[in-house]
Structure formats: C-alpha cells, structure tokens
Length: 348
View 1 (cartoon, rainbow, N blue to C red):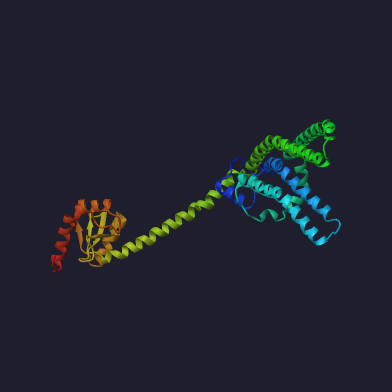
View 2: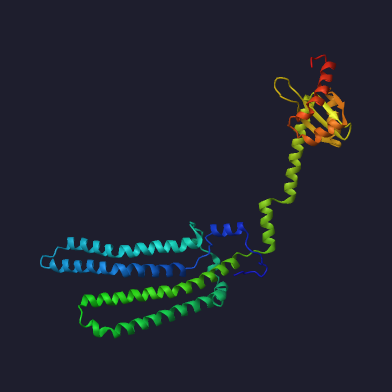
C-alpha cells in the first residue's frame, strides 16, 4: 500500500524493473500451496497401492531376516525403501512449488531481500503493521482456512468412524490403507477449497503490489529527467555538436572548387575530383549568416564564387553536406565548372 498520500501515479516500467531487481515481485504463497496439495493428493491416490505393496514387502523382509539379523544390509534396505517411497512425493512438491512461483513472476535470482533493513526492527513501523489492513486480511484468511480444515477434518473423522464396523472384518494392513486413503482425500478436498482462497489472496497481493509501487508526480518527473537527460544538458550537447559540425564543414570550404551563391541568402560549396568522384559533392552549405561565412572563407582562400540564385537555392534544398548532386543538376554544374577550368587554364 502507498505509504505516502502524494504517491498517486502508476509505477513506470523502470520503477517496476528496479523493484524486480530488489526482489519485490507479485507473489502469493497460497497459490503454490494450493497447487501442491492438489498435485500431491492426485499422485498419492494412484501411488498408495504401489507404496503399500512396497512397504509390505519391506516388513516381510525385516521379519524374515529377524532370526539372523545383520544391521548393515537391513540399514541399507531401510534407507533405500524410505527414499524410494518419499522421492516421488518430494519431487512433485518441488516441481509444483517451483511452477507455482514461476507462473506468478517468472525466473529471478537476487540476494537483496536477505539484506537486513532497519525498518523491519522499527517499533513504530511494527505497530502500524499490526493494525494495518494487510494484517486484518491475513487474519480473516487464516480464520477461513482454519474453518475449512476443521469442517473437512470433522467430516472425515465422522465418515471414518461410521465405517469402523465394516473395517473390523478386514486385515490391519487394509485398515491402515483405507485410513490413509481417507486422509489423502481430505488433503485433496482441502486443496480444491484452497483454490478460491488462493485466488482472492493473489488479487489482494496484486493490489498491494501496485499500491507499494506507486510514485509521486515528482518522482515520475525526476525519473523522466534521468532517462532523457536534463534539458539544459541536452541543449548544451546539441549546441556543441552543431559547433563541431560547423567547424568541420568550414574546414572543407578552402578545398572546394566553387561556391555557388544566391548571392547572400544561400551558399553551397562544391568539390569535384575527376577519376575519383562520379559527380560533384556538396562539402558545405548554409543560409544567411552561415552563407556569408562560407563566402568570406572562399574569398580568403581564392575559391571561385559563382552567383546563380536558382541553382544555389535548389542545391541547398535538395542536398545535404556530403551528398553528390542529383543527376538533373549535372548540366548546370558542369557549365560552371567548365568555365572555372578555362579560367584556370585547365582542360574541362
């Protein structure tokens, strides 16, 4: 349950993951208990005849060896029979117990729940737990379990006592067999009646789990900041990245073959290396103040500047830095480069 009235927001995925890492998972102990009771009862119903036969053979072996009793073989045989009889039951208990927990919260391994917490020894917290809604629920649930157990036990005892008259005509071994069988049926009935109790307990645990994970609006906001980064820091990083990219781009302007301008609103620097490039490449571009800076660097480094407003605007809008110019602009750019090559005395 939420310990703070301000915690009104549902838990975020990150909060749930963190709680899981700390061992806080949705779990009802009554689910594996109910499943174990039913599973073991079903196994025992079919296993009892075989177990009794094995037990009778063991008793016969012990009494047949009583005349020349040797403790070593008898001890080994006793241990073997004991484990042989209980192994199926404990195996089923182990498998069903694991399944009953895995089906609720999956596989998880953490030692954090074993770490002692000061809140567990806080007397004020302990008093609050005693008078909490959770304690009331546990009390009602335990009372219901006790009532069911007493009712089923009473019915079983009455049923067994009523059958004693017929049991007087059968052997002692058969009497024990029927008593054990009635006890197993009692366990099975209790397991069936435990299912709705486990269902109610699971729903309560889920509600309690969600309440404990609730967050305040401030916590949600802080978590979002941690995941996305502080807006000021992100803005500073983006600004720094733009500065680095701008410096890198401006460093390419002196290497360009021509800068095509608008004349002042746009500027696009092109570079072409015959035999290495299939088309001219945009090495720098900019608008307004950036365009003026490109023009300034081009003038300082003797890079030809050609004023062609339509071509400059088209290149600026259709190409990014590092792109080769589109095929439809080959002819227009080729005329400009040919003109520059002639001015330099180079063969176009």
